[in-house]
Image (cartoon, rainbow, N blue to C red; front, side, top):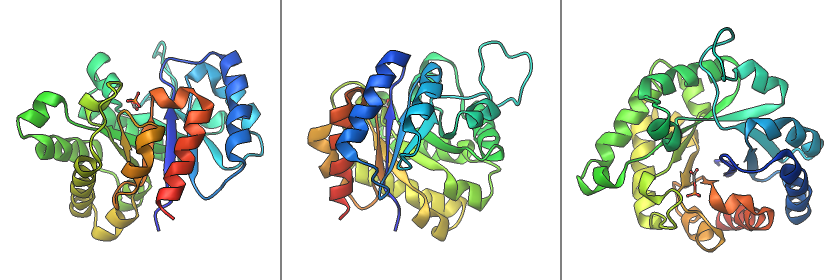
Amino acid sequence: MRKVIIAANWKMNMTVAETASYIPTFLAETGDDTEVDVVLIPPFTSLPKASELIGEAYSLKLGAQNMSAQKSGAFTGEVSAAMLRELFVRYVLVGHSERRQLFGETDQTVNAKLHAAHEATLKPILCIGETLAERDGGQVEAVLMRQLREGLAGLDHKQIQETVIAYEPVWAIGTGRNATPAQAQEAHALIRSEIGQIAEPAVAERLRIQYGGSVKVSNAGELLGQPDIDGALVGGASLDPRDFAEIAKAAKAAKE
Ligand code: PGA
């Protein structure tokens, strides 16, 4: 009953010219398949070109990698939710571990961005996940609960249900070492049960939880075969349009 959501986080890769060659190649592989939500998350500079090229391919949606919690004003270098909406952006990553680790984002700034995204009717993808030290120290549950409770604080049940959660163990991101399907399923089940406490069980049943961290063509089917894994947030492997198309197809097949 939860629609699969596969997202391509290009990070700081892909020029406008590269975006222009990626999208037709990707669409040629997948067609306009509306059974799965596929979200491209390019750098800000490629959003206008991406939105122009996607045109009538309704299956393909756009996301942004970050946004400001502020509406407008003297915030040099920042981009607002309204600016993203103007470019037909529907999703926005919030609190990616690289933003937390390299750019000082906290659960509080993440929470402010989630509120701003919902106010602008953008769907946030809230990224959470433990570091290797936290996993080795037996803190997985405590870390995930804190990131969820503080990140989602003050949102109403409808807003929580429309938020996508991306579980991305930090030790699996860009390392080639993905969580095993069993490890990922265990974390996703924990997250879903915690959402049931923060909101209510019906909200938790409908909310989508993506796995991220070294997802590739060879492991996507097995990961997506887990009952609480509703999609994938793909970094490195999404930079090749054919690989990303294969991942989207594998995800869909895993749920059939
Ligand atoms: P990766 O990145 O697929 O390259 O591990 C995932 C992410 O950071 O979203």
